Image (tube, rainbow, N blue to C red; front, side, top):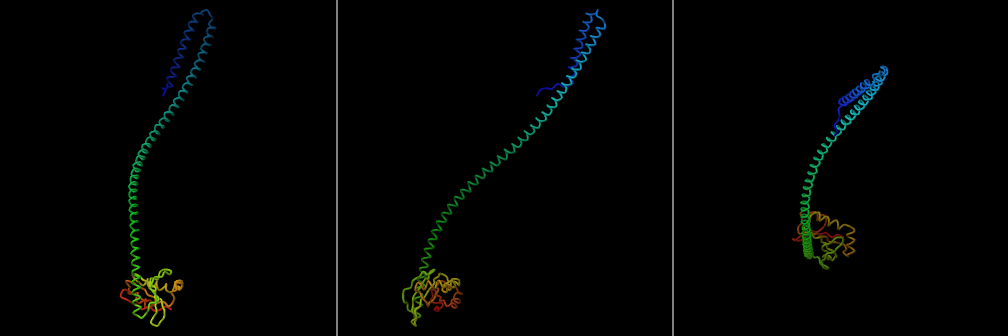
Length: 285
């Protein structure tokens, strides 16, 4: 930044220059006066006054110039003051910017660390999910094998139930004087009748003995079988399969719940278990 000259110093320099000019002029006048002693005093006085007038005008111009210089210096100092203030404000703003950048860098560093931790957790989570997916696949395969095994066992058990129901039904009916008119066999009719046997009672009447076989017979299973025996669509399908009235309905179970006996008696549905006939069936005409 350029060094400024104080206004007072400028004024002092201007005065020194002025008086030096005065002194030089005075010396010139004295020399001229000596050289022109013979000239008239009036002429000399006029020249002196003219010189003094010229000197006065020069002094006026000099003072005006000095004032202009002082004003220019003042404006320069004012501009420099404003410039210094602006530079100071810029320095403060730069300091604040650097401080914000420092905080921002710290925040970015913290975010980067958090991101690294998140990616690490995601990697571990992906590994866990992959292990779970593999375990799920193994579980599904095991369930599928178990399902096939259970289905196989269920088929075997169902077949065994039907065989037991068939043998017990034929035995019970023969003991009561019924004569089988054909082999016992399952018939698929809107669901499955587990055992259907054409028989003739001691009075010579032809009937169809129908048996629903269950591992466990509760009141729910009994009522479901009773509803099917009354449904028009089911009876129509029986007729289409040439299984015609009257019917001798039974339900067979490896385990019979106590409440089933009383309800079956009210419904006229026979109940069979491994011990034989628990409830006598009533013909449905």
